[in-house]
Image (spheres, rainbow over the protein chains, first blue to last red):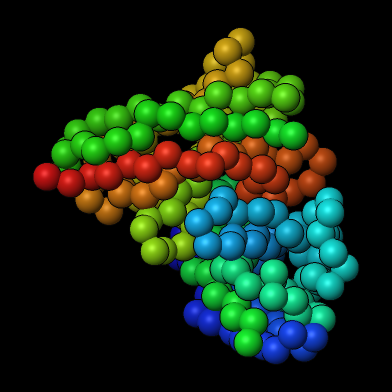
Length: 110
Length: 120
């Protein structure tokens, strides 16, 4: 049950696009299309953004998109806005019938 | 809007016990898997445990298996986490979270969390 691997930080200017990667193994990301992404602004509870690799949760703008190739999933945010600044976490179902999160990525909007 | 309100957090000594509760409202509690997720101060999210709609299946992260017990009372719309043999590394905000019904994800909504501090 090792945590999924995410970059500690990414940054971009308003209007630009950024991509956050999430690398797992054949026991989690590589075997299931059950990857989710959560957004957590400072001091708040996490919010579901993407589920099952690429499906946006209700109310999430289409600037947010998800994908997966092999053992690596990705979250892309296009047209960056100041309000997107937050920590982002990926998660995946595992072969042990549990869930595992990534270590989190801090997005800074310059 | 989904309401999940955690309670029971506080300061406890290493080796001690604590029971967290979560009161759910505005949705049909018995129709959902339920989950506990935690976040150590300044750290990332960690999935802790989940329980099936009727309580018949339960799963735990390795680090708490044998020490923590998840349970639910559907008649009271409540979720619980009994924590025993607590360690300093269990210090975290514990979130109660609802499993989605129509898609796969650890949770679709969570509460505001309750802080558990394990320290002597």
